[in-house]
Length: 234
Image (cartoon, rainbow, N blue to C red; front, side, top):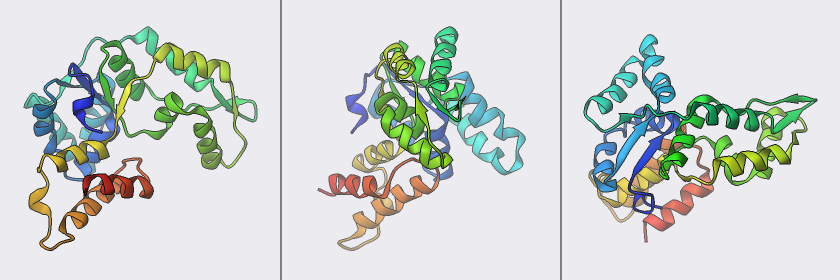
């Protein structure tokens, strides 16, 4: 992956990757990644509420919120105002009616992530998203069913008609994860100064930075980390 493979128009950021990069102390790579990308970095009003407005009222997370606000002040992020509200409501309804257990539907999608994805589709742009549930809903609903059964420890039923309608209405946005942004930053040499000396220095650096992202919210498996390392260490 690389942001060079995404439409040059824009990238829409869900809250998760922003939180991951801030908590992992890697938010500073975003201005350089934006220069490399050559397009706009957007967040939606719902994402702004989640990463700035709400945490500003919680002392533990106030400084993290201020770091994100600074990215807006510095022009790294723009807040995208043209939200397709009706479409988002329809998509959320379809998604949340698509899975059920014991005769009750399961709410699996929130407004923030759906705003980001829907706006990205409207602009033929990419979306930066770590959230596994929505990614699987778009790409592999049978795997999502298995994930929900593991999560809730009970059988989960799928309404395939609603899932197909959801997928048809949404389309297939190009999805980028925070781990992939970190990989591009590594390829650009932005992280080189952290590599310890020795023949395994690059391995230690990649291992530490990718696991740091995982521990701070990126939905990446140990196997995916090892696969990324193999590609980046060639």
